[in-house]
Image (cartoon, rainbow, N blue to C red; front, top):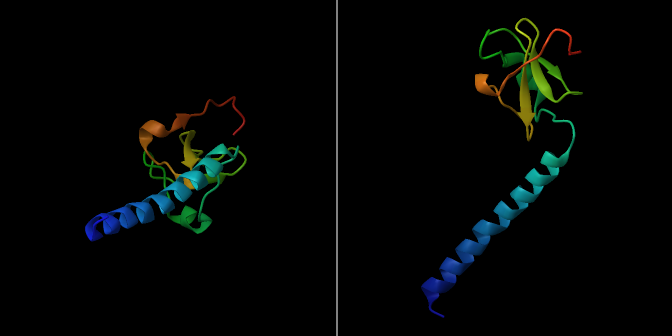
Length: 96
């Protein structure tokens, strides 16, 4: 085996190992029933992308919720998804 092939093989294996571990961790987090924020201190700076009003963290539901316009944004892998199309309108009769 030539030297450059050895270096390439080593680089590929080194790259794949952390990726596999990250995928495994992601699978574990994804399988949990409630999503949690990775860092709750960031919550004081987050606002609803539509109303620009503060969001409320509801850990039991795994969402960030804007009470004023009743939109819930999901949290995936500890990261809030604050994209307007990802938000879910919550009816008044639903208990959030």
